[in-house]
Image (tube, rainbow, N blue to C red; front, top):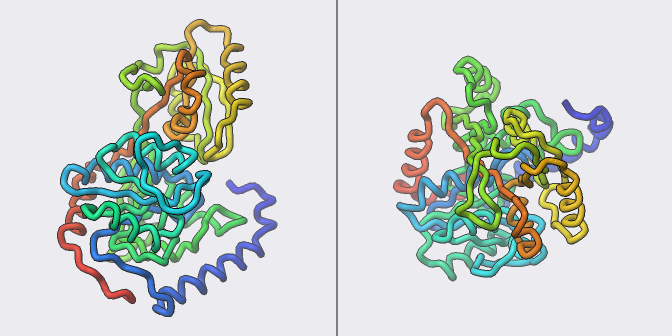
Length: 356
């Protein structure tokens, strides 16, 4: 449910939607040509502003493909403190490339992770420095039409389908609902693990897919907490009685729902999305953690927050600070079908006409 004051901004949404419609119409007519590249490019994105699980989905796709192809990932590096093109290398920090690319770089050392605001400029630079690249994943690029991906994957949150949302500022959509027609694959994310076939059928009818589109449903699965600085240190969440949950992501509800199902009693410290932690934040975290009376206590955080907290390793190393890993799980035993679509696109890749 949107706050009532956002509906007062509806005239601005109409104006913004009109601008988007004109922009997309110009691209659709071919009056502005989108750049294409001579190898498979897969775009992973959404219509809304964050919170649909793009980074875990990018990770899922990397796991399916990296043993068969040389993979590279290109992100804009949202809220990083640098500009221009860069490839992640040893010693890089989250503030230099952004928390999401940093998360990918730490998990997949055999995959090229690069950042660049202008993808049309960054892709040639990436290919020049990594000519062995066979497949490129564009992270969060669905609305950026200067580059034409060969395969577009669109994510939408089960709890806030794009069909039920409005364009900014009234709603959370940064592109019109009709833009979903450009997607080849649509994934409804953050579904209940026990989603029924009838509920899935109702969503399928609501989305009204075109014949060329494929629909999948996924849920989030959380693993045992892992120590932020000691990666071989893993334990069950019920090992502790109390905890402090430190969170700076767009949508923490799926994770808090998960924590609420455990026996852990926790307090929550909420920060803005992609928040750059400072020493004053660290002092507040330490103070609130020390106020917890139980001897059996921990600090829990998300994977994105963990890479931004790593710069305080010397201060936090002795704290029981753990990250809760998350992965997508494709429902209804459709993961094989999804992977087949990816492989079929890559193996039969041909350059489509620019105005197709």
